[in-house]
Image (cartoon, rainbow, N blue to C red; front, top):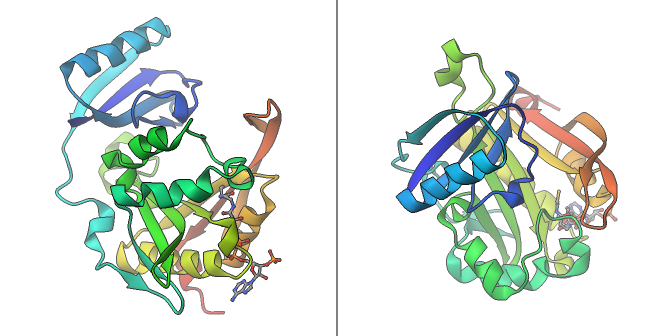
Length: 259
Ligand SMILES: CC(C)(COP(=O)(O)OP(=O)(O)OC[C@H]1O[C@@H](n2cnc3c(N)ncnc32)[C@H](O)[C@@H]1OP(=O)(O)O)[C@@H](O)C(=O)NCCC(=O)NCCS
């Protein structure tokens, strides 16, 4: 298994969930798109190249990325405790507990994908690239939610690109409805911000949601994140409706700002 980066001309219009495996799609200001993620072997690599060719794309570059010795989350001393909660990296054995609430309609309604069944979810949850960005939240030993911390590069001009690597993170959160409305998500995400800024030394965190997902953007505002974008009818929901999307962010210096 190696991590590859495919850079293609133009802004590929594919939903990340449509990408094979765990490839991550990023649009860049220079009009290119990169797809980055693990590719199992040479056969999978050729299959991926064929799919890109069949989609009519022009491949600008392909490179194998050096595997980091440790993933960002491995630099933290786990578990991390707050007043009421314990945060720790996700493990394959957590899949069933997470599936119990992620499959529920009021939760799944807002999520990128709804796997067909527990087996399909287990396989996606246990993918190394996903586990490397997943934390679970426990209360009194019971799993009540999960968090995403995807450390990524900031956009940068080519000459300074090295200084923009792994400086920011996209965050995400999903809590069991049985444990919502009690401030647990707020408590966990406040701690997540501390981990991102104080322990990982990141300069910026971001989060996205559908504008209709009020509990999620209210959570972002409770923890001090700033609304940066409101995209009109830019995201297709599985209901068939085009929904507005919101983007929030917080800089380290804003997080540190005295109240
Ligand atoms: C987004 C999500 C995590 C927010 O959960 P939540 O329960 O609203 O958030 P919290 O746990 O912080 O609880 C906040 C609520 O508890 C109340 N509360 C009680 N005690 C509290 C405390 N000690 N601290 C803060 N809030 C407290 C708040 O007043 C608030 O209630 P309100 O919504 O009536 O104003 C949850 O709705 C969810 O998992 N949704 C489905 C998945 C999803 O949409 N994920 C995001 C995709 S972008």
